[in-house]
Length: 187
Length: 312
Image 1: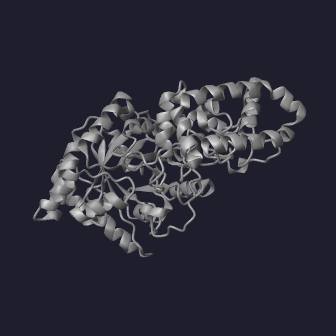
Image 2: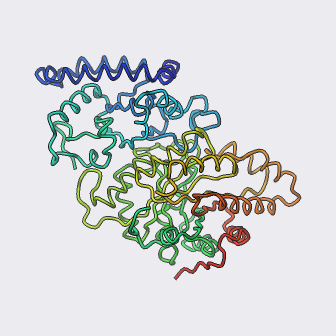
Image 3: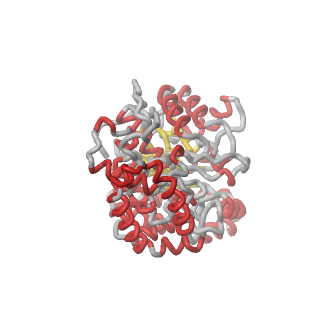
């Protein structure tokens, strides 16, 4: 919902803290998820995540959540789906070029970032969305990617996206994965 | 700015030499006749170090930027290829840029692009696979690492002098310079700003740019336009995305007995004013459908000094 979405960016600091906690829990659960199988867990976590984030952020389930780097304002609500906004068309007062009645997602995002402890993450150059991941769980991907990093992913497996968008790799690992998605051929 | 030149582009040479650079925008023809391109380019070539070939600006369909750029190279000019993210996805853009470099087009301006709803074909599918910043980083990866974004090798990487735009005079004003920093981090070598009619706003932007040291990491060219009637200026302000024209400028046009002459005078003054601002490396002149008057404005502003532009 639009109003709740605006509330989220205005209370970005609180949501940042909440997200930090959630991430710790998810990463800690990685061994459990692996034992059960991520695909099986996704059937439960996916719909839960969808429900929560749709309500709070108008989430579009892009599958590579970057809210911590966008001031808790979901960039997929930008009509141009910019991952590094705002564009140059913002209307006076901070309204959207395309939808004049809507607050610019990125004006909200930069304001939200200013309220956050790790708000500087908004300066990270984010990679383009991987459209093949649409609809999948970002929370599980965070758990997997972070855990993978701890297990020391080997350099040769590093994808070009992870190399080209190194900053994003550090702050938003799901957007610049170290290794290709399991079961998918790249290049 | 770092070390070695990236291309043999004239624009890059002029900027690196510390001279005040001039670029100008060519309005693309609605035709398939190369002569239409050359006719528009001739008056710009007299004063400009590079000519920007717009990429369906305002989401209106015209001859393609790559087509125009290639024609300009053939005639000996130095074009700036504009690439908007609105119409092409990552597969098309990476391929186009290799093609551009092969054709001798090395200056590439990376833009997000106006939404399709602004143009003559609002029913078109908006692509926006990249945004300007992820596009910059991708093209830098193509150039410096000689790989596509997929990781596949490029045997001869493209030679690119990468550009980006920034709009210093529209909201969120307090973050515009920071976002410019992000573009430079992503790979921009030069910046062409959107139209500037509000010098105090632009000065505040440049204060922040200098504070962040961005003017030392990329060359900044200030965008100057030409409004020739109060009605036209009001229309632009209301209809064209990202245009900020203060009322006092429109008042001047309204009160003038010869608004066209007044419009030229305003442009000349703007060029002279931005030149005085520390950190500005040049101007980018955008005179919609008035290419023939660009050379007059630039000459009158005196920024060319005694430097002569010679193509070939």
